[in-house]
Length: 397
Image (cartoon, rainbow, N blue to C red):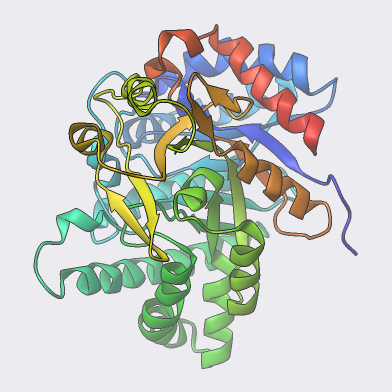
């Protein structure tokens, strides 16, 4: 039976510096107890943990993982989800398309993700399932000659088969169910729901399924079930709003394809409506969000198809004629408008309304990671900003 409000709700700690374990640990100790005290009302509070590759390696040395678990228990905190998308540093230097590196064609990506799952299995409370969000296999513009996209998708499926075997073994030995949550985004090899369904059908079932059959000595249907059990979708609301997909349509498509949503990332994009106000004022407001660290793809719905501009400077340089644009900039979820711009907060509200009558996932993670690069008018003390976002979400669940 579907029960409303049975959610693990948190924010993604990729908002904090995390180039190594020392920096990550310092940020978590500074922020998590403060935020828990204000939003959890004496109850346990979930953590959406982000570990860089280096931080994860360092956490795995000595007794640090056990000590971290002990601290979480003492603070009434628990880890149920992780962000395994960014591999390296995510703050203070240019990230842009390098957020996809190494991609799923690289053994480094597989080793990193396996290590994260090993640590999540240790941290995850008994009786709960845990997920790790990951990249949409690779970045589209790295694939410059015919056939390379298909080759990367096939290699990604092959490596995910190895991961499925690993997660199956963890569940068998420890009784902990874990899943990899693939996160479509503009200019990824998987951008939208149709491409994710296609990846399951054309690559995972074709390539991973026979590998599982061979290694586990099981039939085709049993292997297929394992794929759909351990590989799921990360529904990032910002990203799907950039794809101009209605939540109910996407969730129905996933359900019909047998794809589970492992996690919903609660996030908002910028929305620019050119039918409102002076166009120069709109362009001036949008220019305030042009910054050099993160990739800010811009999308436009034209003739029933989504056209993607690779980054915000490309659009600002042209200042073409548009009716509506949407920009990949994770603005605060409680923000409906900024100067002459809108946010896609309406998509968040549509998802929350859908959750009132449909069971999609128990994992909700606010992901606003751009606080450092927001225009000055939107910058507030970080602890207060995170608390405000979580309270806004909680009030609407």
